[in-house]
Image 1 (tube, chains in turn cyan, orange):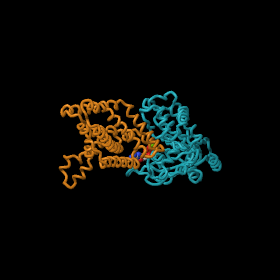
Image 2 (cartoon, chains in turn orange, purple):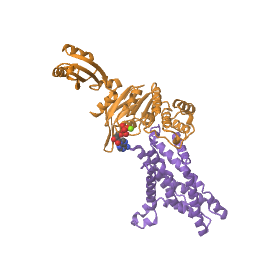
Image 3 (cartoon, rainbow over the protein chains, first blue to last red):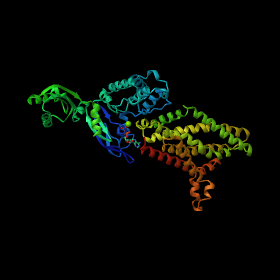
Image 4 (cartoon, each protein chain N blue to C red):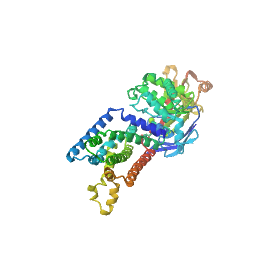
Amino acid sequence: MIKIENLTKYYGPVLAVDSVSFEVSKGEVVGFLGPNAAGKTTTMRVITCYLRPTSGTVSVAGYDIHNHPVEVRRRIGYLPENCPLYPEMNVVDYLNYIAKLRQVPAAERPRRVKEMIGITGLEDVLWKDIGELSKGFRQRVGLAQSMVHDPDILIFDEPTAGLDPNQIVEIRQLIREIGREKTIILSTHILPEVSATCDRVLIINDARLVASGTTDELVSRAKGADVVTAEIRGPEEEVYQALRKADFVDEFRKIKEGPEEDGAWLTLEIESTGDIREKLFRLVVEKNWSMRELKLEKMSLEEVFAKLTTS
Amino acid sequence: MKNIITIARKEFRTYFESPIAYIFITAFLLLVNFLYLWTFFLVGQADMRSFFGFMPFVFLFLVPSITMRLWAEERKMGTLEVLLTLPVQEKEVVLGKFIASFVFLLVMLALTFNIPLLVGFLGDPDWGMIICGYLGCLLMGASYLAIGLFASALSDNQIVAFILAIAICTAMLIVGEWFFLILVPDVFVPFFNYLGLGTHFESMGRGVIDTRDLLYYISVIGVFLYLNVYTVENRNWV
Ligand SMILES: Nc1ncnc2c1ncn2[C@@H]1O[C@H](COP(=O)(O)OP(=O)(O)O)[C@@H](O)[C@H]1O
Ligand SMILES: [Mg+2]
């Protein structure tokens, strides 16, 4: 559906996107995740044909952005960052105006506009000027605007930024519903948003794509994504040596040493990829040591993100 | 074509969404009526020569304030990002905005109808000359509009766009005026004179329609609209 190849964009000397490539297939909801200034907005602006890339190309539903920008725009609904709207227009006039320019046939226009108003819950503010609306309602107008021509592809740039917690929940719910039928790319710098709404995540940092996969995949791919806490009693040096040798251990550290009269219990934090509890237990049995605690903790998406974007 | 009309209608309506448009039109009408009546009673002739004489200078400030908002405000608000990701071509947006501003100018000029009425009431003017003068006003105004619209796309600040437009219009106006022409070598005088925005207007104000004048205004409009499309197509702004 969307294919991005070696996309690079400079603003003068500033490199905003550095040879990014990825594909989005039909029906996917993809989260575009990265800290501020990572290059998310720029990438979206290129896909929507708002800006031309310095090099590389994008094709949307088979149409190239360089040769057929109008065809590309026709197939996309776009909600830009900060949801820019005309404050002096009222909601109905605005949606009609966009529907007209989106070439929704005149006979269908009232029905489409009405449908959008229903989906986004704008019934109470139809005749108000957009400038008088709260941020939450403005965001809904932005969403309604992006879908009025029933596009296959939707691109939302930080759709929940600046909303209060209740509004965030509502907008996410709305996006999930829309995502059942449509291909969506949404950007965010907030992690829970991705797990709440997306099938797949693309992590972008410092203009480069650093990781891509489902949230579970990313969590398990990050080296040392699982942490096992174990309390082991045995000769300290021997224990360390055995752990260093074991191929299922990525890294470990001693976080506490029990009181002497207890017989030197070592509390260890062992990082690994995947669940290693059973292997660890067997090792302890084999060496004839003792064990009195064994606990697995998954690394959270936040920690994965921090790991991927700091290295 | 449909897109151009849709955009033009929206832009035209936007002028009247704020009270500024009404204040602005009132101020314009007061100014031109005052300027005209003042010279009318001074000279005591039943024609509109003086009216068409000061129009190039009134337009110098009037027209850039009609166009300054059209791109700059959309750039500042970010609404251009929605507009230019709709399935419309940049040239359709440029033309839509140009037509809206032209119709606004048309409305303003139409509202000066009391002046020819007064002239007709008090004397027996040459109506051909008056119609010709108004046509000249429209052509010259459209040229200023094209320049102002282009200037508006160069900034995201309306005031900067306004000043830029005045600067370009002034430059285009004075190259043809006597106080500039006395400074240039004789061989260039016809060239600069032809380039001047006011030169072509003067003859129309006297009731003469020359195809060279028409061609001149149409070229100025064309060139600046083209520059506008080029600027927008090659944008690298937010
Ligand atoms: N119009 C612009 N002119 C110059 N630099 C820009 C412009 N837009 C973005 N940038 C720069 O490009 C980089 C990426 O920005 P952006 O794509 O907005 O990131 P994000 O949306 O991930 O926060 C940043 O360093 C930003 O400062
Ligand atoms: Mg952004």
